[in-house]
Structure formats: C-alpha cells, structure tokens
Amino acid sequence: MAIPFSILDLAPIVEGGTAVGALQNTLDFARHAERYGYHRYWLAEHHNMPGIASAATAILIAHVAGGTRSIRVGSGGIMLPNHAPLIVAEQFGTLETLYPGRIDLGLGRAPGTDMLTSRALRRDLETNAASFADDVLELRRFFEDREPGQAVRAIPGTGLQLPLFILGSSLFGASVAAMLGLPFAFASHFAPDALADAMDVYRTRFMASRQLERPYTIVAANVVVADTDAQARRLFTSLQQMSLHIRRGNPVALPPPVDDLKSLAGAAELEALNHTFRHSFVGAQETVASGLQSFLKMARADELIVSSPIFDHSARLYSLALTARIRDSGSLRAYSRA
Image 1 (cartoon, helix red, strand yellow):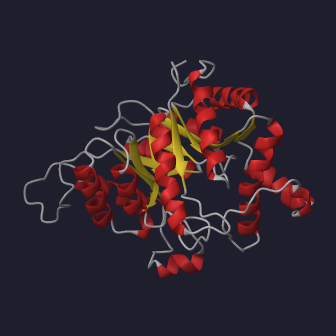
Image 2 (cartoon, rainbow, N blue to C red):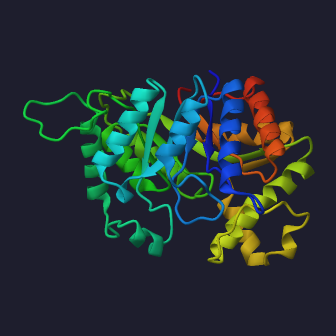
Image 3 (cartoon, rainbow, N blue to C red):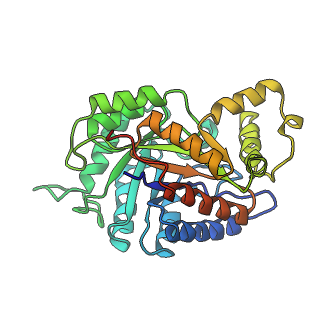
C-alpha cells in the first residue's frame, strides 16, 4: 500500500524578503501540493522567530484553505498551553464550518518559542503531563454533541467531531496520544532520538477511541530534492544555517545557501547539526528514494509529512514536484500494516 505524503510548512521568511512574500509563497506552495496529490498541508505555530511567518496559525490555515479546493489543511501544530481550549475550539470550529471535512487540529505541548516570549504569551510555564492531557480532553469535548445542562459551548464547534492529532518529540506525546486514542505525529525532522521508543510506546499503550480504532502514526522528515546530490546539499545549507543561528541564540530569516558550511561552523556545531537532521533526505531522486525507503521501513509509519525550507521558491517548488515523483514511483509503501 502506498504511503500518503503530506506537507509541514513554517511559511519561511527568507533573508531580504518579507512576511508578505512568505505568505504569498505559502499559498502558492499549497496549491502546488494539492495539484501533486499531497494528502494534507499543516502549518506550525512559532512565535518571535524572524524566519517564520506562521505565528497566527489559525488565520494562515484559513488563508490556505480558502485558496485551495480539496487538500486537508491544519495545524502542525497549535501549542495548546499557549491558548485556552475554548478559544482553540471556536477558531477551529469556525474553520471547519467554512471548509467542512478539510480541517485538522494538531496539538503540541511545547511553547513554540523562547522563555521570554512564552511569558509574553501569558503561558503557564509550569504545565505538566496531566494538565496538557486535561486540556486536550476539554478541547475534544467542545467538538462533541451538546450534553444536557452544558453551560459553555464552542459556537461554531459543538457537534463537529473535528479530528485531533497529538504532536510530540518524546515519550510524553506518545503516551498522551495512546491514552486518548488519537493519531500521533512525531517531530523526527528535528528531534530524532526518541522516534523508535515513542512509536513503540504509542502502539503498545494505544486505547481505541471514538475517533480512532487502531494506532495511526505520522513521521516528519526534511526532504530536499534536486537534479543532483550536490545541488540538493547546497540548498539544504539554508536550513542548517538557520538552525545554527537558533542554537547560538540569534534566530534569523532563512539564509541563502552557501557552498561550504564548514566556513560558518565549527566541528562540534557541524556534528550537532548532523545529529539533529539525521532524518533528513537530501539529494537527487534516487538518493532520496533510497533513504526514505529505509526510514519508513524503520518507523513503520502510516504517513510521511515533509518539511522543505528552501531559500529559492522555484527550487522549493521543484523539490516538491520531485518528491511527489518519488512517492508515485511505487518504491515506497506504508509498513505499519506489514
């Protein structure tokens, strides 16, 4: 069985560019993703990041859903501790009402920013496993049918049965998703270490729910495809540079690619980058297809979600098209049912 490919987009603001250009590119990218048969298009909540234009995630989801016709659009994810569950329910209830049957609500526990910005968001910095799970349950109830005597409702929202997903990069997210019987998406594109253990925990502890009868897993990977391995590796240096600046405490807009990353980073920094992006597949079609085949077999995932922050928009669109060709080649399949 062929595995669905989806898109994770942070609406990258490139060096020398603007948020206006980033949002225009996001809609254009989503339209191409729909044309190439990608399954869903998720946007991520991040704050106070010069290179990311998706902070107002629900608004951007409306922008993308309104500019496309059939592709599922959602959050990858909404960082629930930043928001009251009722507000999220009202926002996504409105989205589902405007674009019925097309909206996903992915939820995470991380702040999506630094500690100072977290305080500016009025976020409870002491959130724990129990409070996050309780918030997800509260949010889910707002999408269920109205109960007798229920005083507070999400309008729109009540009765819409909007699909929820749990996002995570550790065993914590896997445990919550399993306990609540929700699909689980793992952020392996930047946090590779706990992937195998988290998938085992999720599958072992999974309890069926009204939404989901059996486990459903999504794994994330950075994918950059070009005509040659060398061209793709050069394009990938933009994301590597961006990550390097974040590690140094100086986040920047997405930089243009460079010929030699070694001139910008020390050996320890390069080693850390290579580890962080271990589940990144960069090269010509044959190179990426081989890497993805091994990755998907190891993860036994039901779905792959692809992140491709590339400086040049035309090169990003070309990578999107080549990635779709890899998917359609017949060499990749879902191993979760094997």
